[in-house]
Image 1 (tube, helix red, strand yellow):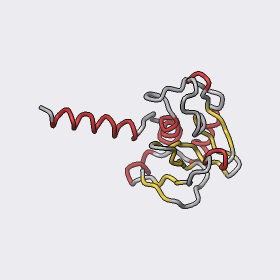
Image 2: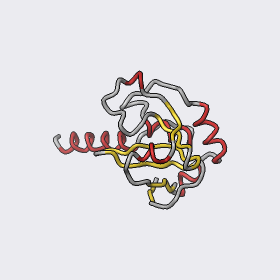
Image 3: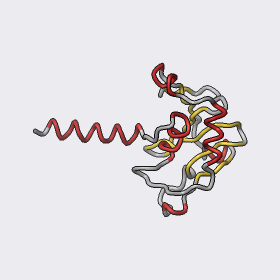
Length: 136
């Protein structure tokens, strides 16, 4: 996924930088962003973090909005925006947050591509593998 500061379209993945990580959501319109938790939920007990809908200002929490721009490969796998929104809305109120296995990036990728994954965690795993390989 590439990122731009363009205005998002309905059903698009959006993100905002929070400290050293990004917080992700699904853009419906300026009054409805569906996300797994809030940008400032770090430190909150996992069982209190739920999928919810907020407005764009609550989502951004003072940060800058970035819109996801799918790669050519991702475009082949992306769902239609109505299906993305329907999936995201159906999960409002759902819990089960886990920073490593079920976070806001996992949520948006599952809604958009039907596959739960986190590029942030994939990058961390790759760096660890690389470090281990270099130490052999």
